[in-house]
Amino acid sequence: MSETNAPVKLPLGAKDIAAILPHRYPFLLLDRVIAFEPAKRVIALKNVTINEPFFQGHFPGHPVMPGVLIIEAMAQAAGVLIKLSVPHDAAKSVVFYLVRVDKARFNRAIVPGDQLRLEVEHKRSMRNMSQFCGRAFVGDQLAAEAEILCAEVAS
Image 1 (cartoon, rainbow, N blue to C red):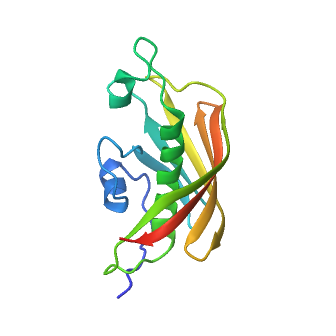
Image 2 (image 1 turned 135 degrees about the vertical axis):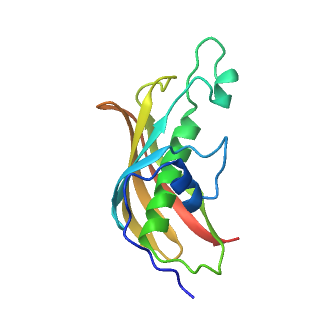
């Protein structure tokens, strides 16, 4: 039996996102979804706080959010986009894996107190994979960008 996707009421908070994605603390990296166009794009927020566990070692005295986690946050936003856009079989458990990152660029350090605005656009789908273009902003500054490929895998 396929589940139907009801209209999305924005914003989506942390509990709503946790109902969509399998990630949990400390690896759920999205706090809010503020915009959504089915099968096209999503805009999500990540509030970066000094309490993030990765800041203990990256780097002591000069906390910087690891670039791989910025990319992971983009991939999680892409997962929200796909899960909200495409009806999925409720009886079948699926997970979306990040399988490729291309053209990654980091333009500024992300530090405690920043709010990341993650803008992810769906580019194309092929078989069980989808390609996305992700950008992370702090205010109006582009902080990072990448093309990512995610694959849907039965779990």
